[in-house]
Image (tube, rainbow, N blue to C red; front, side, top):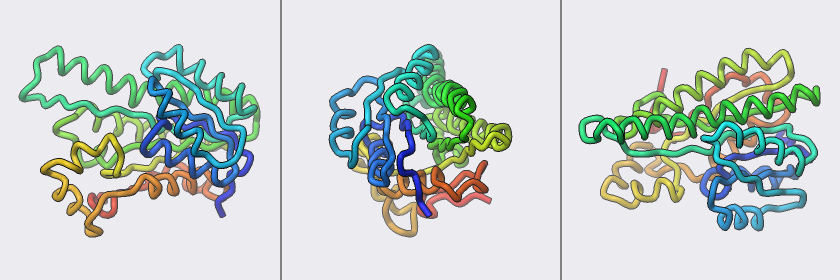
Length: 254
């Protein structure tokens, strides 16, 4: 049974897309949500205004800057009173085909992507876990990965590598934190109908992308959000360490 009422939840990258849908799902169920954004405050305020209930807040940080991740968690805790659920959703994708970019473009894409998609969640998780341990009441961490961690991302290899690293980190922490009542899970979507995916879905490859799933479409943000909500709820503890594919059977792994 889904139960997150009165929980303090931090959702990174919540100004739009999957993150916005996640924030809305938690708010609808009675949680208090800290909406993280990096620079688009206007979009974050739109998310905030769309949430049911009270006690929600905005928190800003560049996750690629380690010092800002500590402030992010501090600000979320200060506003919410307590942080029991962390959803690491923020991420970037940057094209850098090895056969066509120069070395500086290649290096820059890797450094920026890893800093945001892997080191960012690692550092936010560190500070969130410090708080959860101090409170002594456990917690939930749900990380948003990608099917690209398994099938490969030839046009953006740093993205695939960052998400594979996020999966490995999540499973390592699931083992480390279960004795403390902190449970770590992952959702791995395929294409999702968001602004980030729109250039692909609306372009010449759109029909091919949709046909990858036998359902003939891509996921809706709400479908990913409901999976995150379930994993963060009471009763899902024994799923810790699990990576849940949310890709409409577009990519099946053994």
